[in-house]
Length: 118
View 1 (cartoon, rainbow, N blue to C red):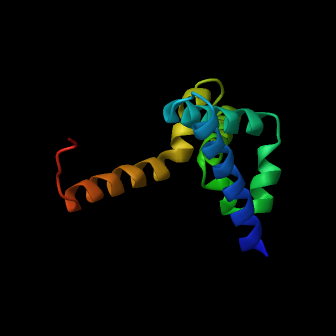
View 2: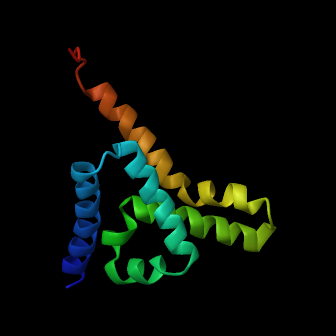
């Protein structure tokens, strides 16, 4: 049943993003940043943690989950070291995912063929 809820919640998040692309003039970059900021805001008001606990990877993997991770890391670092933690905590919490995406992106670029876009 956990897989079903993860699929439903993650799919719902993706459906909202696709509807924003199809029916608004928002660019994908604005939707991406909007999702991350929405994850931070939902985490700050305490609404995202229950969703992430309920849906698991369906809520923690999408961009909303990245915003939640940044907010939780900043909050944890502020609790430990005060105001400077607000600037360092989010990136510290997300550093593993950021590093993995960079490494896999470089590996995919090296493995792929170059083609002219035109």
